[in-house]
Image 1 (tube, rainbow, N blue to C red):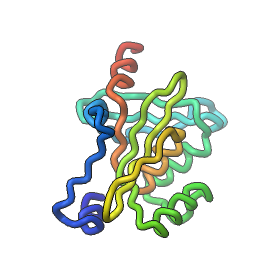
Image 2: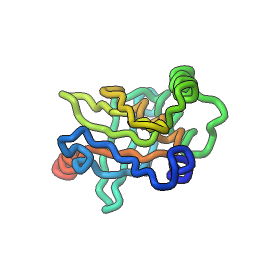
Image 3: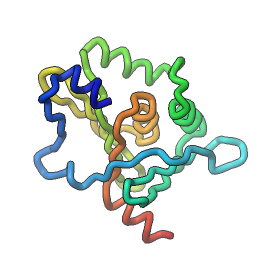
Image 4: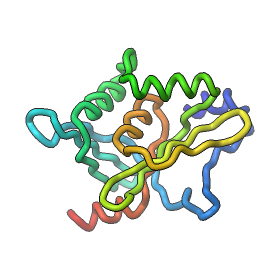
Length: 159
């Protein structure tokens, strides 16, 4: 991904996103370590996100359909994508946007995510989208997923 980003923005481009309040340092980079289902019928999906230090954050309460897409993308099957993800792809191509990272956070009782795009000239953030779809897009594009630090801490305390 960084090679793509460098070829898109130039080798000396420092692509970093910060709202000015230091929110970039409140996130931990994580990878998808498990995708599955909560129930035997595949109705409710679950994803476990794992940080480099071994901490895990389980995420559930999203559709089994999204979990199936994430699993497929993880396995390299990116031949067909759902219409809504294709919409993001087409708009990004038309506007020369590159999705470069996803940041997941808690908003009330639900998980939300911000999508960070890069262009040749600047950065753009789309805020407050469903975390599950955002993680599916991250899996599709092989881009970093960052999780709010406090979510990892809360997951450790619940064990």
